[in-house]
Amino acid sequence: MGHALDIEKLNEAFEKQKPAEIIAWAAKEFCPKLAMTSSFGPESGVLLHLVSSVDPQIPVLFLETGYHFPETLEYKKTLVEMLGLQNVVDLRADPKKRQALVDKHAGKPYEQDPDQCCHINKVEPLDAALNHYDAWMTGIRRHQTDARKTIRILELYEGDRTKISPLANWTSRDTWWYLKEHKIPQHPLYEKGYLSIGCWPCTRPIQAGDDERAGRWAGRSKKECGIHLFQEVKRPEDKDKTPAPDISSDI
Ligand code: SF4
Image 1 (cartoon, rainbow, N blue to C red):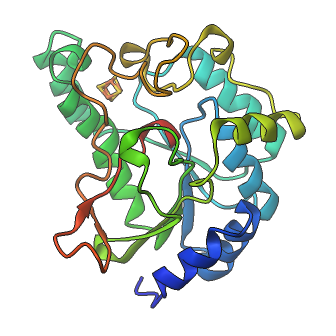
Image 2 (image 1 turned 180 degrees about the vertical axis):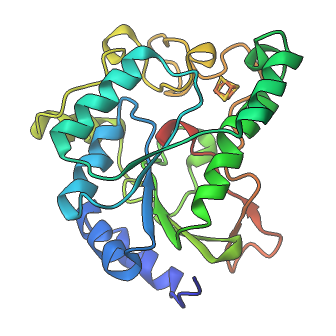
Image 3 (image 1 turned 180 degrees about the horizontal axis):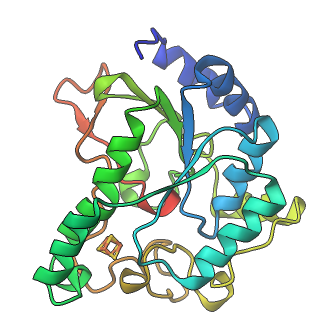
């Protein structure tokens, strides 16, 4: 912890650099205290491929909520083998807390209290895991949603955690071409209209013209899973501190 980084200067430089260069910088700066998160969703192959090219030992943190599509778990296996990922870590909720929540809501906490369901299954395990690292990489992009429009490649969070989003200025077209160029298979549900994939109870396919994440918590006001809302971004211009955008679909 405690790297004295010139975030402003680095961000200015990173905007003009390729993601592979940014990841190489992060590896040099933070390894072995560097991890990445992945949801093994439709775009996850891009960051996983880039990171594995730099160092396949970098830990890949996966939130195993117990509610993933079987296709996601199958896709995860495929990418792990194909990319030679050597350090994939499944993060799980505290079993007692999870069971209590399931019992309280008749087996369907995602219907009756999705915020608490996300908190116990995602926020808490990720927060605990990140205590072991100084920095972590995610695949979030500015084009994904309005809430993500302002993300920067490098963000410093409370507790001196550094988040790196090497694909922040990429479009969905960039990621599509990258997967094609590197012959990385697509998530099996992508062809069925699922552009952003999380847990099965909270994910639907989307229609033409919809926002990329419109299929997440469809029909509810909930748009984000709450991961990192427990943390705050530290920006010099944001004296009031800005809550960090959610990263649920990209871990
Ligand atoms: S996305 Fe849905 S099922 Fe998954 S943790 Fe959140 S509320 Fe629960």
